[in-house]
Structures are given as structure tokens and as C-alpha cells.
Length: 366
Image 1 (tube, one colour):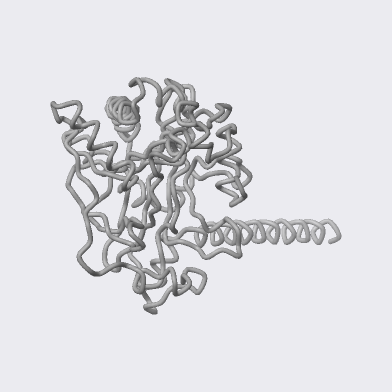
Image 2 (image 1 turned 180 degrees about the horizontal axis):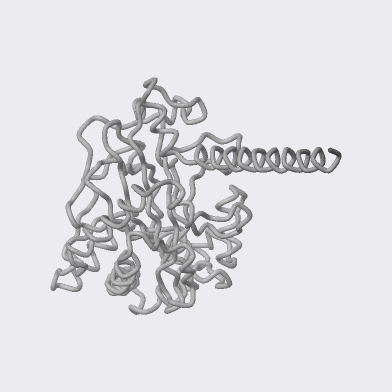
């Protein structure tokens, strides 16, 4: 009798342990799921509202701050322009005046751009547990991986976006842990896109250098040369029941040297120009080129890093595929000596890129 009672007790204890473990796993899964904006979005449409933490202050809400009048358009430049001097002038002027421009006839095949968009879209259509395979570890100091900005400072307003960061060039910087295996051909698409993008990068750096009166190789070498890291980010902005109140990404400049962005057809990229937030026009197959902080620093302010933000849509998901061209972490970046003299003193500190990134991401003074 005593032995049977002991066995029964062990059975009950074992069953309780299994039940508690399953409950813990369910709670963990529940918390994980609610860390993602896609899940929050799917629940929000039931009540035509969004959680309070996503509602921006009125002075930042797109409904009240987006310019509705006739606005100038971001320059669109034909990268196949045979007149080199003309091309250099167009890109230099756009980089000084706007800090952003679009390029057409850039040499990346349209079908490859469509494939890049297709595999990104399919990744975000996967079941949540499959996406989480690529998740950024919570204790990681790197930004690589699948995630949301929801895990940052709890005092900050949250933004309506999930994302996937992963480096695609050069090979020693790649961590395949964060490259999706599903859809199965996504890795090949990434590799092919990186190959074509490198040609665009070389042309941009050369023309930007020439536009400052430098030799063509100077800016690229100062930004890291062949060690420049290509960080691809896939942004997914789910449909939002109140796009008038929230943002996909708050106003910022990119910490990169240059950003090369592929959008989808859903508008949302806005540029701060002449004290107004104006919307970027969508041009099929065009690349949107952002001047980032490191080019502004190297040029001592001659080229301007563009202040921009992202809005979201009510009935469609917006997506974008920016590639951030970043110096290696240990590289020291500062204004080039060619742009410093007694009449034009240095405007920026010289520091390692990894230290600049740390300050930028943690909103610390540079």
C-alpha cells in the first residue's frame, strides 16, 4: 500500500511538473509573440485602435505634420548618364542640397529586385516560430537578427515595424545564423543582390569623391575600402488601423556612410526639407540613396545626412530593403584634412565607428 501511494505521488508530481513546464513554455511563447508588431497589428484591427505606447506625441503624428501642398521632388538621376562630369554634378548637388536622391538605370536587374522583395515578403509570411529561428538574441550587442524595436527603452514610444538585419558582404562579416533558410532560395538571392550592389556602391563612392574635388578612390578608402560592411535590413510595416497616429520609424539620420534602399509600392518614406515633411515619390525599380552620417563627417558637412522617417498604411503592408554601408567597427572616422582650415574648422569628432554607433544607438552625445 505504501509503495503504491509513493508511486502515485511520484506520478502526480511528474504530471504537475510536465503541466507547469508546458504552461511556462506557453507563457514564454505568448510573451515572444506579443513582442512582434505583426501580432499586435492583427489584434488591433478588432477594435480599430492601437496600443497607447504606439501613439506619437501630436507634434510627431503624420496626420498633423505631413506637408499636403505642392512639394519639390527628390532628385532622380540616371546612373547610366554617359557625361561623367554631368553625372558627378547631379549627384554632388543632390547630396549637398537634399542628402538623398533616387537612381535609375543602375545596373541591378529588375527581376533580381523582384526576387529580393519576394523572399523578404515570404519570410514575414512565415509562422511566428519559424521567423523566431532568426531572432536576435536578447543579450546580443549586435543588431543582427529578426526583431522589433519594442525591446528598447520602455520609456520611449514604440514604432510600427518588425525587421530582419543581416550582413551580406564581405564574406568574413557574414553570420549565416541570421540568414533565413526559408524560402530555400533566399540565400542565393542575397548573394546575387550583394554582387550587383557592389558595382553600384563603387560608382556612388567614385562620383561622390569627384564631386568634392577629390580623386575617385578617396571616400571609399576613408570609409573602410574593401572592408566596408553591407548590412541588409528588411523592414516590415504591418497594416495599421490608425496610421494617422503612429510611425514606422521615427525621424533620424542613418549612421552608415551610404544607404541604398529598395522600397515596395506602398508610400511611406518622408524627408524633412525646408521645414516640411514631404513624401518620396515611388519610382519602380529605382534605388533610393541616402547620404549617411559617415559621409557627412568625412566631408566635414559638405554633404548632408538626410533626416527622414517612415509612415505606415491602413490597408497594406509597407516594406523596404535598405543596405547600410558601414565602416568596420575599429576604423577611425573623422573629417578629411582636405576640408579643414582656419576658415573651415572641424565640425565633427574623430572616433572609431563602433564608438560612434554605440553613442548613436543609445542616444548618447557624440
